[in-house]
Image 1 (spheres, rainbow, N blue to C red):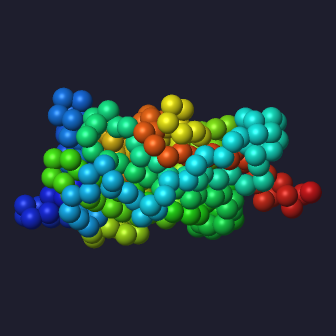
Image 2 (image 1 turned 90 degrees about the vertical axis):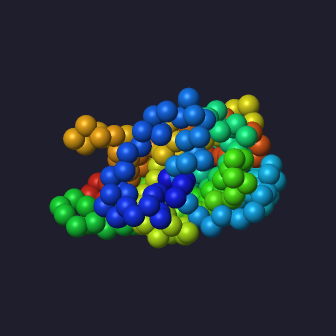
Length: 247
């Protein structure tokens, strides 16, 4: 999650992984959760309201042809996909500039796994990237990270997907999976969610900690879009490989 993850305080890796997320529980009171928690990346100088993610020009959402865009009502797309770039209106950090850029596409049964019935992978297997940028008003720093998409599932104009961090200034973030969600639209309709902001909490021996994120696990898209736009292209889950083989 955004922040320094205890660097420089003598805390070991295991301690950092089990650190308390009490700050996340108190975001409404402190308005500092996003500034203090989340995947860290290289901090740069003040960028103010002009801070952007790696993609400088937000893409505009396409006009859906119906509930299952782009084929129109009752006609799912051939492949599920989420695309777009947007700045969020996050209630607990109203002065910060938070942007996400997404290009996620379904690639069913493309990640074979060990174990029975998993040799073909999952119907929700996916690929792509999620890039995010967070300009922190309190410190005038910009933090960035990039992650590789591994799972995607859609339902109408809404999707949940997960991605594993591939680029970050914090080595401990590399390989960590986070959950995201999106709803088609621009400001006034489009929304976005990310797992470390308002949820993903577990309690171990009475201590609240950040829980591990499983594939395609994410909160609802809780944050409205302030600018830019997102497009979710729904596609029904494909038949299982065994069913295809039977014809």
